[in-house]
Length: 258
Image (cartoon, rainbow, N blue to C red):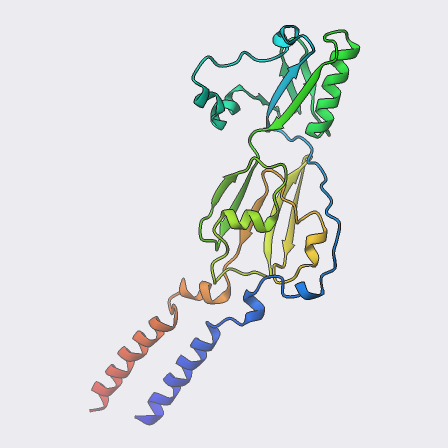
């Protein structure tokens, strides 16, 4: 009977050890004590197809700018401030990078940031004699990031800030679960007609100095499960499942050897 029991005990010990994770697999920014101060590059994002822009044009005499703006909804103030209402009133960027404005007609946003578009529209309005001292405001209305995988609250999250970081995006999703792989966060980014796939090790801090640190609208973040989580999806399962199976097998052996 002892010869039968020992292999099962060893199996249970091995399974338990495999399901454990060390601090080096879980703790964030483990080299933070050696990190030196770095200047943050707040590089503006270029406008992309399917972006929705809020464009407001003004002038010294407000009445002269009215034809250059979309009509303001006549509904209640709360409805006007609702982001979904604002999106419906915004300008959708086509797959060709074009938007269509009142009076000015179709204009290209390709390779332009919101700041670039503000300057471009101001120049067009002035030099073509449309308005005197025009003012232009451009704002992205549908900035969003999608977080999938081993996080507590996966989904797509909208943000109104001009800049958010990768850790902030993971915070929107409720942080990683204990079974999420912190050493290989997958970042999928589509910008200017090119799709990039990058990998981030959250246990270090050196990656914060490059373009992966600041999220771009429409980024997708994927957190894959570690080996312990994958095993729980199989036939053997976790340690408690192994204990149950071992107990059944031992009971069967005892009955058969009586």
